[in-house]
Length: 407
Picture 1 (cartoon, rainbow, N blue to C red):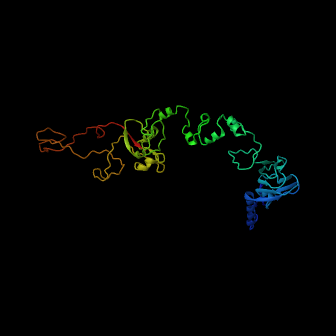
Picture 2: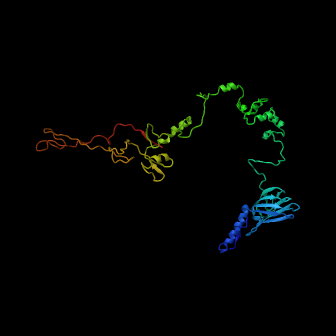
Picture 3: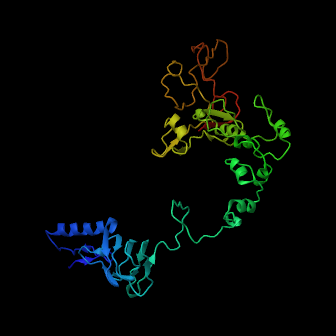
Protein backbone atom coordinates (compact mmCIF):
# COMPACT_ATOMS: atom_id res chain seq x y z
CA UNK A 1 0.00 0.00 0.00
CA UNK A 2 1.66 3.32 -1.09
CA UNK A 3 2.23 6.27 1.23
CA UNK A 4 -0.37 9.01 1.72
CA UNK A 5 0.19 12.62 2.85
CA UNK A 6 -1.53 14.97 5.29
CA UNK A 7 -3.61 17.70 3.65
CA UNK A 8 -2.24 20.77 5.43
CA UNK A 9 1.51 20.03 5.80
CA UNK A 10 2.25 17.23 3.33
CA UNK A 11 3.56 14.96 6.12
CA UNK A 12 4.15 11.45 4.74
CA UNK A 13 2.14 8.56 6.18
CA UNK A 14 3.80 5.31 4.97
CA UNK A 15 1.47 2.49 4.09
CA UNK A 16 1.33 -0.77 6.05
CA UNK A 17 4.51 -2.79 5.39
CA UNK A 18 6.14 0.04 3.42
CA UNK A 19 9.69 1.41 3.80
CA UNK A 20 11.11 -1.48 5.79
CA UNK A 21 14.51 -0.39 7.11
CA UNK A 22 14.09 3.24 5.94
CA UNK A 23 11.52 4.52 8.40
CA UNK A 24 14.15 6.69 10.10
CA UNK A 25 14.58 8.86 7.00
CA UNK A 26 10.86 9.42 6.66
CA UNK A 27 10.43 10.21 10.36
CA UNK A 28 13.34 12.69 10.32
CA UNK A 29 11.87 14.48 7.31
CA UNK A 30 8.43 14.60 8.93
CA UNK A 31 9.93 16.07 12.12
CA UNK A 32 11.61 18.82 10.05
CA UNK A 33 8.25 19.61 8.41
CA UNK A 34 6.52 19.78 11.81
CA UNK A 35 9.32 21.98 13.14
CA UNK A 36 8.75 24.43 10.29
CA UNK A 37 5.01 24.44 10.92
CA UNK A 38 5.46 25.25 14.61
CA UNK A 39 8.35 27.71 14.74
CA UNK A 40 9.79 27.95 11.22
CA UNK A 41 10.55 31.28 9.55
CA UNK A 42 11.45 32.02 5.93
CA UNK A 43 12.37 35.18 4.02
CA UNK A 44 10.70 35.52 0.62
CA UNK A 45 12.03 38.03 -1.91
CA UNK A 46 9.18 39.39 -4.02
CA UNK A 47 9.94 39.80 -7.72
CA UNK A 48 7.45 40.90 -10.34
CA UNK A 49 3.68 40.74 -9.96
CA UNK A 50 3.04 37.15 -8.83
CA UNK A 51 4.51 34.16 -7.00
CA UNK A 52 3.28 30.86 -5.54
CA UNK A 53 3.72 29.76 -1.92
CA UNK A 54 3.62 25.96 -2.17
CA UNK A 55 3.27 23.16 0.38
CA UNK A 56 4.68 20.05 -1.29
CA UNK A 57 3.99 16.47 -0.20
CA UNK A 58 6.87 14.64 1.48
CA UNK A 59 9.48 17.35 1.01
CA UNK A 60 10.56 20.57 2.72
CA UNK A 61 8.87 23.61 1.16
CA UNK A 62 8.32 27.30 2.01
CA UNK A 63 4.56 26.81 2.35
CA UNK A 64 5.11 24.70 5.49
CA UNK A 65 6.72 27.61 7.35
CA UNK A 66 4.80 29.48 10.07
CA UNK A 67 6.43 32.96 9.78
CA UNK A 68 6.87 34.75 6.45
CA UNK A 69 9.14 37.80 6.04
CA UNK A 70 8.56 39.51 2.72
CA UNK A 71 11.39 41.56 1.18
CA UNK A 72 12.30 42.95 -2.23
CA UNK A 73 11.13 45.65 -4.63
CA UNK A 74 8.56 44.03 -6.93
CA UNK A 75 7.73 47.33 -8.65
CA UNK A 76 4.03 47.14 -7.81
CA UNK A 77 1.47 45.16 -5.81
CA UNK A 78 2.51 41.50 -5.64
CA UNK A 79 0.03 38.59 -5.47
CA UNK A 80 1.10 35.46 -3.56
CA UNK A 81 -1.00 32.37 -4.36
CA UNK A 82 -1.14 29.78 -1.58
CA UNK A 83 -1.08 26.22 -2.95
CA UNK A 84 -2.62 23.73 -2.86
CA UNK A 85 -6.03 25.35 -2.50
CA UNK A 86 -7.40 22.57 -0.26
CA UNK A 87 -4.77 23.04 2.49
CA UNK A 88 -5.73 25.04 5.59
CA UNK A 89 -2.89 27.34 6.65
CA UNK A 90 -2.14 29.98 9.27
CA UNK A 91 0.70 32.42 8.55
CA UNK A 92 2.22 35.28 10.48
CA UNK A 93 3.42 37.83 7.91
CA UNK A 94 5.60 40.93 8.09
CA UNK A 95 5.93 42.90 4.87
CA UNK A 96 9.39 44.50 4.69
CA UNK A 97 9.14 45.02 0.91
CA UNK A 98 8.30 48.38 -0.67
CA UNK A 99 4.96 47.20 -2.11
CA UNK A 100 1.67 45.71 -0.95
CA UNK A 101 1.45 41.90 -0.84
CA UNK A 102 -1.90 40.27 -1.72
CA UNK A 103 -2.49 36.72 -0.40
CA UNK A 104 -4.91 34.55 -2.41
CA UNK A 105 -5.86 30.85 -2.38
CA UNK A 106 -8.95 30.61 -4.55
CA UNK A 107 -11.79 32.71 -5.90
CA UNK A 108 -12.80 33.76 -2.36
CA UNK A 109 -11.62 36.77 -0.37
CA UNK A 110 -7.99 37.93 -0.40
CA UNK A 111 -5.91 39.71 2.25
CA UNK A 112 -3.64 42.65 1.46
CA UNK A 113 -0.66 43.34 3.73
CA UNK A 114 0.57 46.88 3.13
CA UNK A 115 4.28 47.66 2.94
CA UNK A 116 5.67 48.06 6.46
CA UNK A 117 2.70 46.27 8.05
CA UNK A 118 2.22 42.86 9.66
CA UNK A 119 -0.73 40.47 9.73
CA UNK A 120 -1.90 37.04 10.85
CA UNK A 121 -3.78 35.34 8.01
CA UNK A 122 -5.86 32.19 7.71
CA UNK A 123 -6.28 30.25 4.44
CA UNK A 124 -9.44 28.16 4.71
CA UNK A 125 -8.47 25.47 2.15
CA UNK A 126 -11.86 25.66 0.47
CA UNK A 127 -10.69 24.37 -2.91
CA UNK A 128 -11.35 26.50 -5.97
CA UNK A 129 -13.45 28.89 -3.89
CA UNK A 130 -10.88 29.12 -1.07
CA UNK A 131 -10.60 32.40 0.84
CA UNK A 132 -7.90 34.13 2.87
CA UNK A 133 -8.93 35.98 6.06
CA UNK A 134 -7.12 38.55 8.20
CA UNK A 135 -7.25 37.18 11.74
CA UNK A 136 -6.82 40.70 13.19
CA UNK A 137 -9.97 42.09 11.51
CA UNK A 138 -12.61 42.93 14.17
CA UNK A 139 -10.14 41.84 16.86
CA UNK A 140 -11.74 42.01 20.34
CA UNK A 141 -9.38 43.05 23.14
CA UNK A 142 -10.13 43.59 26.81
CA UNK A 143 -7.37 46.17 27.26
CA UNK A 144 -4.74 47.80 25.05
CA UNK A 145 -1.50 49.40 26.21
CA UNK A 146 0.04 51.77 23.63
CA UNK A 147 3.56 53.08 24.22
CA UNK A 148 4.87 55.76 21.85
CA UNK A 149 3.82 56.25 18.28
CA UNK A 150 0.93 58.29 16.93
CA UNK A 151 -2.76 57.38 16.96
CA UNK A 152 -4.75 58.92 14.12
CA UNK A 153 -8.42 59.02 13.21
CA UNK A 154 -9.70 59.59 16.75
CA UNK A 155 -11.96 62.59 17.53
CA UNK A 156 -12.82 64.02 20.95
CA UNK A 157 -14.62 61.29 22.94
CA UNK A 158 -17.93 62.42 24.45
CA UNK A 159 -18.40 62.51 28.21
CA UNK A 160 -21.19 59.94 27.92
CA UNK A 161 -18.70 57.54 26.32
CA UNK A 162 -16.10 57.99 29.04
CA UNK A 163 -14.22 60.94 27.52
CA UNK A 164 -14.11 64.70 28.16
CA UNK A 165 -15.60 65.90 24.87
CA UNK A 166 -12.69 68.29 24.48
CA UNK A 167 -9.10 68.55 23.30
CA UNK A 168 -8.01 71.16 25.86
CA UNK A 169 -7.86 70.97 29.66
CA UNK A 170 -9.97 74.11 30.20
CA UNK A 171 -12.84 72.88 28.00
CA UNK A 172 -12.58 69.39 29.49
CA UNK A 173 -13.01 70.77 33.02
CA UNK A 174 -16.09 72.71 31.95
CA UNK A 175 -17.60 69.69 30.21
CA UNK A 176 -17.06 67.63 33.34
CA UNK A 177 -18.97 70.18 35.44
CA UNK A 178 -15.93 71.50 37.32
CA UNK A 179 -15.37 75.19 38.09
CA UNK A 180 -11.90 74.87 39.65
CA UNK A 181 -8.75 75.60 37.62
CA UNK A 182 -6.34 72.97 36.35
CA UNK A 183 -3.82 73.95 39.06
CA UNK A 184 -6.45 73.51 41.77
CA UNK A 185 -7.52 70.18 40.31
CA UNK A 186 -3.91 68.90 40.41
CA UNK A 187 -3.94 69.37 44.19
CA UNK A 188 -6.73 66.80 44.31
CA UNK A 189 -4.63 64.00 42.83
CA UNK A 190 -5.57 60.97 44.96
CA UNK A 191 -8.72 62.50 46.50
CA UNK A 192 -11.76 60.16 46.37
CA UNK A 193 -14.52 62.75 46.93
CA UNK A 194 -17.39 63.21 44.45
CA UNK A 195 -17.70 65.95 41.81
CA UNK A 196 -20.15 67.93 43.96
CA UNK A 197 -17.78 67.75 46.93
CA UNK A 198 -14.82 68.83 44.80
CA UNK A 199 -16.71 71.89 43.48
CA UNK A 200 -17.00 73.15 47.05
CA UNK A 201 -13.20 73.41 47.08
CA UNK A 202 -12.99 76.17 44.45
CA UNK A 203 -10.18 78.40 45.75
CA UNK A 204 -9.17 76.10 48.65
CA UNK A 205 -5.40 75.84 49.31
CA UNK A 206 -5.40 72.74 51.54
CA UNK A 207 -3.17 69.76 50.69
CA UNK A 208 -4.33 66.42 49.30
CA UNK A 209 -3.85 64.70 52.66
CA UNK A 210 -5.93 67.37 54.42
CA UNK A 211 -8.70 67.15 51.83
CA UNK A 212 -8.97 63.39 52.28
CA UNK A 213 -10.11 63.94 55.86
CA UNK A 214 -13.42 65.37 54.57
CA UNK A 215 -14.15 62.62 52.03
CA UNK A 216 -17.95 62.08 52.15
CA UNK A 217 -18.68 65.12 54.34
CA UNK A 218 -21.69 67.15 53.14
CA UNK A 219 -21.90 69.72 55.94
CA UNK A 220 -22.10 69.97 59.74
CA UNK A 221 -18.67 68.35 60.08
CA UNK A 222 -18.51 68.62 63.90
CA UNK A 223 -22.03 67.17 64.23
CA UNK A 224 -21.03 64.17 62.15
CA UNK A 225 -17.83 63.68 64.13
CA UNK A 226 -19.73 63.85 67.43
CA UNK A 227 -22.01 61.06 66.21
CA UNK A 228 -19.09 58.70 65.68
CA UNK A 229 -18.40 56.03 68.32
CA UNK A 230 -15.39 56.52 70.58
CA UNK A 231 -12.37 54.31 69.95
CA UNK A 232 -12.13 53.36 73.64
CA UNK A 233 -15.11 51.38 75.03
CA UNK A 234 -17.46 52.33 72.17
CA UNK A 235 -21.23 52.00 72.47
CA UNK A 236 -22.77 50.68 69.28
CA UNK A 237 -26.26 51.49 68.04
CA UNK A 238 -28.34 50.08 65.20
CA UNK A 239 -27.23 46.73 63.81
CA UNK A 240 -23.41 46.73 63.66
CA UNK A 241 -21.82 43.99 61.56
CA UNK A 242 -18.40 42.43 61.50
CA UNK A 243 -16.40 39.62 59.89
CA UNK A 244 -17.29 36.07 60.90
CA UNK A 245 -14.37 34.04 62.21
CA UNK A 246 -13.43 30.67 60.74
CA UNK A 247 -14.88 27.56 62.39
CA UNK A 248 -13.25 26.54 65.70
CA UNK A 249 -11.49 29.92 66.08
CA UNK A 250 -10.34 30.40 69.69
CA UNK A 251 -8.90 33.92 69.96
CA UNK A 252 -9.91 37.34 71.33
CA UNK A 253 -11.71 38.12 68.05
CA UNK A 254 -15.33 39.16 68.54
CA UNK A 255 -17.78 36.37 67.75
CA UNK A 256 -20.69 37.25 65.47
CA UNK A 257 -24.10 35.67 65.91
CA UNK A 258 -23.44 33.75 62.70
CA UNK A 259 -20.29 32.22 64.20
CA UNK A 260 -22.02 31.31 67.47
CA UNK A 261 -25.03 29.69 65.79
CA UNK A 262 -22.81 27.74 63.40
CA UNK A 263 -20.65 26.43 66.23
CA UNK A 264 -23.68 25.48 68.33
CA UNK A 265 -25.32 23.69 65.41
CA UNK A 266 -22.12 21.84 64.54
CA UNK A 267 -21.53 20.92 68.16
CA UNK A 268 -17.78 21.41 67.66
CA UNK A 269 -15.53 18.72 66.25
CA UNK A 270 -14.40 17.80 69.77
CA UNK A 271 -17.81 16.19 70.52
CA UNK A 272 -17.49 13.56 67.78
CA UNK A 273 -18.13 10.16 69.39
CA UNK A 274 -19.98 11.56 72.42
CA UNK A 275 -23.21 9.69 73.30
CA UNK A 276 -26.03 11.70 74.87
CA UNK A 277 -29.68 11.18 75.82
CA UNK A 278 -32.31 13.52 74.36
CA UNK A 279 -35.94 14.03 75.36
CA UNK A 280 -37.02 14.14 71.68
CA UNK A 281 -37.74 11.36 69.22
CA UNK A 282 -35.56 12.73 66.36
CA UNK A 283 -31.80 13.24 66.36
CA UNK A 284 -30.84 16.93 66.79
CA UNK A 285 -28.55 18.67 64.28
CA UNK A 286 -25.01 17.35 64.49
CA UNK A 287 -26.03 13.94 65.85
CA UNK A 288 -27.15 10.52 64.64
CA UNK A 289 -29.50 8.10 66.35
CA UNK A 290 -27.45 5.48 68.23
CA UNK A 291 -29.39 2.68 66.55
CA UNK A 292 -26.61 0.48 65.17
CA UNK A 293 -27.09 1.80 61.63
CA UNK A 294 -24.31 1.56 59.02
CA UNK A 295 -23.33 5.08 57.90
CA UNK A 296 -20.84 6.55 55.41
CA UNK A 297 -17.18 6.68 56.43
CA UNK A 298 -16.74 9.75 54.19
CA UNK A 299 -19.81 11.75 55.23
CA UNK A 300 -19.12 11.12 58.93
CA UNK A 301 -15.32 11.19 58.65
CA UNK A 302 -14.74 12.83 62.05
CA UNK A 303 -16.91 10.26 63.86
CA UNK A 304 -15.25 7.37 62.01
CA UNK A 305 -11.83 8.71 63.04
CA UNK A 306 -12.93 8.44 66.70
CA UNK A 307 -14.88 5.15 66.95
CA UNK A 308 -13.66 3.30 63.83
CA UNK A 309 -15.24 -0.15 63.52
CA UNK A 310 -15.64 -0.71 67.27
CA UNK A 311 -19.42 -1.16 66.87
CA UNK A 312 -19.33 -2.85 63.46
CA UNK A 313 -17.47 -2.50 60.16
CA UNK A 314 -20.57 -1.80 58.05
CA UNK A 315 -19.99 -3.11 54.54
CA UNK A 316 -16.27 -3.39 55.25
CA UNK A 317 -15.17 -0.56 52.96
CA UNK A 318 -17.36 2.55 52.75
CA UNK A 319 -19.56 2.34 55.88
CA UNK A 320 -19.26 1.65 59.61
CA UNK A 321 -21.78 1.06 62.41
CA UNK A 322 -22.75 3.42 65.21
CA UNK A 323 -23.51 1.85 68.62
CA UNK A 324 -27.00 0.46 69.10
CA UNK A 325 -28.34 1.89 72.40
CA UNK A 326 -31.99 1.10 71.74
CA UNK A 327 -33.50 -0.56 74.85
CA UNK A 328 -30.08 -0.71 76.53
CA UNK A 329 -28.62 0.64 79.77
CA UNK A 330 -25.07 2.05 79.53
CA UNK A 331 -22.40 0.55 81.79
CA UNK A 332 -18.95 2.01 82.45
CA UNK A 333 -16.16 0.03 80.78
CA UNK A 334 -14.24 -2.02 83.40
CA UNK A 335 -10.86 -0.98 81.88
CA UNK A 336 -8.88 -3.31 84.15
CA UNK A 337 -10.71 -2.63 87.41
CA UNK A 338 -11.83 -6.25 87.80
CA UNK A 339 -15.55 -5.78 88.53
CA UNK A 340 -16.68 -6.63 85.00
CA UNK A 341 -13.52 -8.44 83.81
CA UNK A 342 -13.04 -9.77 80.33
CA UNK A 343 -15.30 -7.20 78.67
CA UNK A 344 -14.13 -5.77 75.35
CA UNK A 345 -14.72 -2.05 74.91
CA UNK A 346 -18.02 -1.43 73.11
CA UNK A 347 -19.26 -4.99 73.54
CA UNK A 348 -22.89 -5.80 74.39
CA UNK A 349 -23.80 -7.88 77.44
CA UNK A 350 -26.84 -10.13 77.82
CA UNK A 351 -29.20 -9.96 80.80
CA UNK A 352 -28.04 -11.88 83.87
CA UNK A 353 -29.36 -12.60 87.37
CA UNK A 354 -26.63 -13.19 89.94
CA UNK A 355 -26.69 -16.77 91.27
CA UNK A 356 -28.62 -17.24 94.55
CA UNK A 357 -30.93 -19.70 96.29
CA UNK A 358 -34.18 -19.65 98.28
CA UNK A 359 -34.41 -22.04 101.23
CA UNK A 360 -37.67 -23.22 102.79
CA UNK A 361 -37.35 -24.99 106.17
CA UNK A 362 -40.05 -27.56 107.02
CA UNK A 363 -40.42 -28.44 110.71
CA UNK A 364 -41.99 -31.58 112.16
CA UNK A 365 -45.67 -31.24 112.66
CA UNK A 366 -46.06 -28.99 109.59
CA UNK A 367 -48.26 -30.23 106.84
CA UNK A 368 -46.85 -31.58 103.55
CA UNK A 369 -45.15 -28.96 101.30
CA UNK A 370 -43.85 -29.46 97.83
CA UNK A 371 -44.09 -33.23 98.05
CA UNK A 372 -42.07 -33.45 101.31
CA UNK A 373 -43.88 -35.04 104.23
CA UNK A 374 -42.27 -34.59 107.66
CA UNK A 375 -42.20 -37.48 110.14
CA UNK A 376 -43.26 -41.00 109.48
CA UNK A 377 -39.75 -41.86 108.37
CA UNK A 378 -39.56 -38.84 105.97
CA UNK A 379 -37.23 -35.86 106.29
CA UNK A 380 -37.97 -33.30 108.89
CA UNK A 381 -36.63 -30.42 106.73
CA UNK A 382 -35.63 -29.78 103.09
CA UNK A 383 -35.30 -27.33 100.12
CA UNK A 384 -38.11 -26.93 97.62
CA UNK A 385 -38.93 -24.94 94.49
CA UNK A 386 -41.01 -21.95 95.45
CA UNK A 387 -42.27 -21.41 91.89
CA UNK A 388 -41.76 -18.53 89.35
CA UNK A 389 -42.95 -14.96 89.71
CA UNK A 390 -42.17 -11.61 87.96
CA UNK A 391 -41.91 -10.42 84.35
CA UNK A 392 -39.64 -11.06 81.30
CA UNK A 393 -36.55 -9.19 82.63
CA UNK A 394 -34.94 -7.70 85.72
CA UNK A 395 -34.77 -3.88 85.59
CA UNK A 396 -35.01 -0.73 87.73
CA UNK A 397 -37.58 1.97 87.14
CA UNK A 398 -36.70 3.96 84.05
CA UNK A 399 -37.76 6.49 81.35
CA UNK A 400 -37.30 5.83 77.62
CA UNK A 401 -35.15 8.57 75.98
CA UNK A 402 -33.43 8.84 72.59
CA UNK A 403 -29.74 7.93 72.58
CA UNK A 404 -27.72 9.87 69.99
CA UNK A 405 -24.05 10.09 69.03
CA UNK A 406 -22.36 13.30 67.89
CA UNK A 407 -20.55 13.30 64.57
